[in-house]
Amino acid sequence: MNGSRWRRIGLGVGGLVALAVLFLGVVMLSNVGLRGMRVDLTQNRLYTLSPGTQQVIADLKEPINLYFYFSREAAAKQAPLVMPYANRVREFLEELATRSGGKIHLRVIDPQPFSDEEDRAAEFGLQSLHAGSGDALYFGLSGTNSTDGRSAIPAFQADREEFLEYDVAKLINELGTPKKPVIGLLSSLALQGQFNPMTGQMGEPWPILTQLQELFSIRSLTADIDHIDKDVDVLMLVHPKALPPKTLYAIDQFVLRGGRLLLFVDPSAGGDTSGQDPSNPMAGAMADHASNLAPLLAVWGVDYDPTKVIGDLERGLDVRTSMQSPATRHIGILGLGRGDMNQKDVVSASLDKINLAAAGSLAAHPGAKTTFEPLLQSSTSAALIPAQRFNALTDPSTLRDGFKPTGVRYTLAARVTGPVESAFAQGPPADQKPAAGPPIAHLAKSAAPANIVIVADTDLLMDYMWVQMREVFGQRVAQAFANNGDFVANILDNLSGSGALISVRGRATFSRPFERVEALRHKADDRLRGKALELQAELQQTESKLTELQGKRNDQSSLVLSPEQEAELKRFVAEKARVRKQLRETQRGLDVDINRLNTWLKVINIAIAPFCVAIAGVIVLSLRRRRRSAA
Image 1 (cartoon, rainbow, N blue to C red):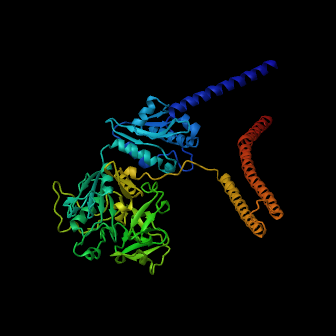
Image 2 (cartoon, rainbow, N blue to C red; image 1 turned 60 degrees about the horizontal axis):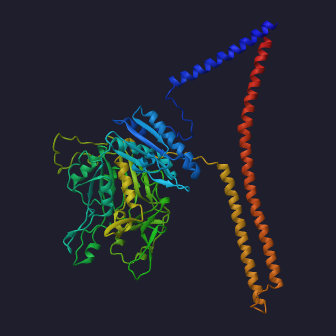
Image 3 (cartoon, rainbow, N blue to C red; image 1 turned 45 degrees about the vertical axis):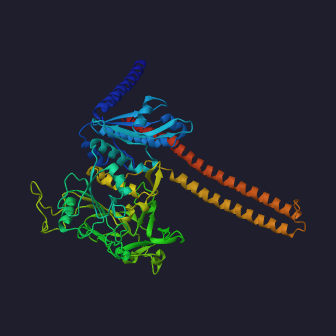
């Protein structure tokens, strides 16, 4: 009996040892055989790379180095709320490095104060956020390539969390293609400066052009071009007027070849000086200052009326027609805020304010094959105004005469993507000359999905709409008070990237708030706010009562309170104490509700889940015993 018992114990121990060896073997085999295999079970697939990012990595011709700087100790002490987002960024970068097949070398650095790593972070251009203790807090990304090219994200911002993948993919794309993108500029406005007959000199270029020249390689194009070079990454058209057919054909074929386009049209351009005559000031005011790109807009699926201007009662800005006149609401000069911008598109999501003047309206043509995505929109208190009313306008208040909002949000800027067809179905126009070199075949439809951004305003490019010139140490410096320049730079930056980079859109945010807890907090805040208003009302009533009692006294100069005043004051003090007690009870009730919810979560996670596992084990054990008994 004892021998059989020891035999069973030995078999049990041997089985446990065999199971342990088998478990270790499976783990080792999984580490080798399943290396690189991951499953993303998050709700919004936060750790799954989009096809665009995967293509950006695949297009890398040489390895790049990424340096993720994060001051963990300083963040833990002074900014603990940054920690979860920092972990999210680090895990995303590790996923990139793992999926790159050795093309991306990631190094995570915790720069200590006064260390070589901190000096190197500053050399990369990373921004340090000084914590309360004085230690620098770094939370940014830098990268290098084999040709000593550098690029950096100075600091990761929580409000751009949904564009984390785009920002990192953009940095990788810049390191993979370090040359400046080429922007072909065709403009009927004097962006490069206009000749001043009074001084006999050329004027200074517009600040918008100066800013773009720092970021891109700008190539000026004439209005009579018959082709656009293949090395032009983005074509920027500003206020196109009466373009010849050969130029329209060149633009048409450029878009069909996969070229990206940024188009500015305007029903009433303030920067259009055509038709001006110094001897007749009214001649320029009555000239046609509208621009259009017909018939190309029609085949791209966009409706645009160059004779109508958007007026907006809510977004109209106050202006002065002279120094002596009071400010007047101008419903044709609009100030757009974050709520008027597309927060899902990378070119407009991080902007705060954009100013426009006499802007037109864009809309998707019914039945169009392209996708029309608004970037900037008016409020619902808007309507269309004939552009002729802006000619020689002296009193902006007259624009409100007969103005009736339609309740529609009009689109002022939009992105158009998808397949497009040629506006020249019969082939090149008669004035088209053969291009030098091998003949270029006519394209009847786009070889790749088009990507076009259209802005129905050119005045946003003018100085007075977004910058103020100041004299600093004898030099003229432009200080921006609106994001007009950032908006244009973001568009060109986005369009000049690879097609894979453009396809990387905003993702869901990583933060997952406790909705039930937030609802409890909001409910308590509502109750607290009501009690605070009640207390304020009682305070005002008591002060009024005290003033009334003081006025009935015979001795107005006496500082001694009357019996009535003392009674009223005591009543108020008692009432104030009661209300404060209710406020504390309300706050305590909030804490009780939240703690009760927290307790139930702990019970579910700590007790109920193991209890369910234990019950399942008991059931399995009972079934086994029944089988043995039956056997």
